[in-house]
Image 1 (cartoon, rainbow, N blue to C red):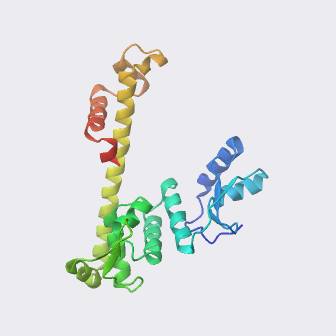
Image 2: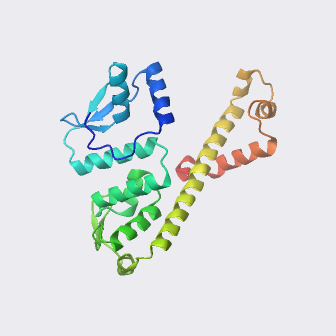
Length: 240
């Protein structure tokens, strides 16, 4: 099995067992992504389990990508699915910065599904140790190259306070976690509102919405109101 683009550590034993059980029951639902030479870009664990079970493993070929583009794609697909630790996420961001230091913080953040401020603090640490170049320009999502403001460029060159960088990175990660929780709660509120408005609780034999929430969801009236309020406050666009 080719593994040049397996950029994350192996799945934990319980995660591997869960994936194996799913594949045994349903087969491979998401095709393994390979390049024109058969090297796996995404789906190493799926291919490994399929080979062990002796079942068909569907593949999808992505042609014409350079090594840098393949690594970026592998990181993007993995961060969208896997539950990463803080250190794993930091290393993933660092790897992307080493590959594409010319890209803006927001562009990298969008590709990896992280906060752009987390990317910024990681960049400052790598730049201060010479692991990535201290560029005066950045490439935006539109492909255009823009010069950095003098203040920001100077700050990145002089920022070698690792303790402060770690603290700032941790704060941004906690901030991102709060936003993720709010997104999930807002989505739950939208689903709950739809159940209420369409009276779908009757499918379960409940005649009243509040009784359904209390007995089926173990939620009191205040908790239901809070979720519905979040759904009203955070539209899908805002929550994203």
